[in-house]
Image (tube, rainbow, N blue to C red; front, side, top):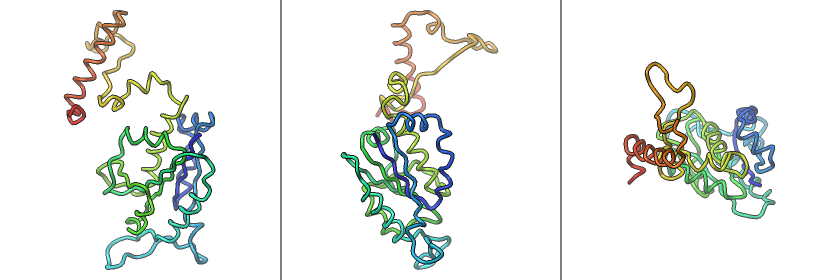
Length: 226
């Protein structure tokens, strides 16, 4: 079983996470346990203040380090499952999150995700994480959106969640994009499904899929071939 713990100041954003059928399947099978920790509950004072203005001036508010690190220490202190624990924080300067990263995360016993908010997090938080990741070269309004992406991509790799055959042929699994897919009708507005897919010749179909995967990758993501 894998445990994913999410440290967030907006736990309500995860109230509907079970509506994602892949995540729900992993939860129901017992392969995944999901914990949501509210960072605000670790803040001091009556108002549970988790943000403050940045030193040196600037727009927006910064997530304070004390409540985040307290929440992280509490999460790590609850470790009961043997195996590797990985703590990851989100930031634009982080390493690119890839399918390879998702597969590596799926093999650990505990994954802790630190969600930033506001204008960003106090820079002193990042050294407490094992790694910093970025889900893309764009800005999200909060780290919770990135965390949802990670939870989904990791959950589908857990045993029994998605058929192994489906995973093997997906984009990025073999450093290739997936081949084009078709379904009924066999012809639509003059565009026909490739005849080889209707032939019943499984070896020819396998070769066609491999060739198309290479062509798709060469056309759209030649960097993967490199």
